[in-house]
Length: 397
Ligand SMILES: Cc1ncc(COP(=O)(O)O)c(C=O)c1O
Image (cartoon, rainbow, N blue to C red; front, side, top):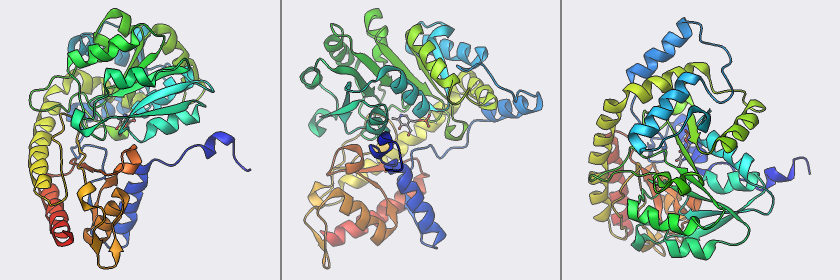
């Protein structure tokens, strides 16, 4: 075998693979409406761009401390205090090269062979693979559409064994948009409180909440829970800065220090220029985010209504993130000529082939029977893609 064992345990990111498919279809001259995107279609905010340019002009182009600059850590500490009601010191915060890297560092520091990590499904594509890459075992706990795809305290309790090391919570969630009220978080926290299980709380979509929902971090439930939690966030989604690659974590100083050691031996530090841009966005980007999220809410409202009018499709209205997760089980078993559609993967392939509309099948998120559609595309593009989908689905029905 030419590679290390761990490489054989993982697959390439399904969403990045779909992005590559869209690129190659376009290169071949085909029109693609890409609903596979995991990044806001907005241009990064001016204050971040200006800060990056200034960093370059001022010669801020050298190594930084492995865990991030003092200035960015201070901006993160202030953000967590004012927006999440969480008091951390700079020693309890680490900056990494995107939230995905932050999560990977956490996995490196916390997981060992034989450890079990609880993942509510539908889950973000990278969690199971990151867990497996770090020798631990993903324990998939299905959630139900009827329960808003939220993890219940009962399901969490039932999944815990003596080997459980952590639970990864993602709210608002990719791909379902599921979000929790403070009471629902407190009920989950009550299950974790008597255990030594870590909570990894991925809050990267915290600003994308609708209908007046307010995001709460599970770390805010109590001091006891805060000591067991690693809060993960970043600037990729909230400020449309995916290419800057800045994510961060806040948690107990010992864990953060261990993550910093891992990082010092892998990437050294996040880019100095991006750190300047991220600090500027965290300090001055609130209006930018509000404007963007209002537009996302408008798109969500339109798309949910449209999807629910399509025969065989049912789309819950998500509370957050920028994805829709329609149930397409009503399309299974149908034929398009000789082609029979048996799975949501078949639905996604058929839609792409017939209409050029790219979606990601639920199979990629541990939830067959659904499709994920991102509405991080302009309103008109979204409407045009939905027109194409509707025409094909009506014909199928
Ligand atoms: C749930 C979730 N967590 C983390 C990330 C990673 O974000 P970043 O671009 O900062 O690495 C993503 C990106 O798609 C995501 O959907």
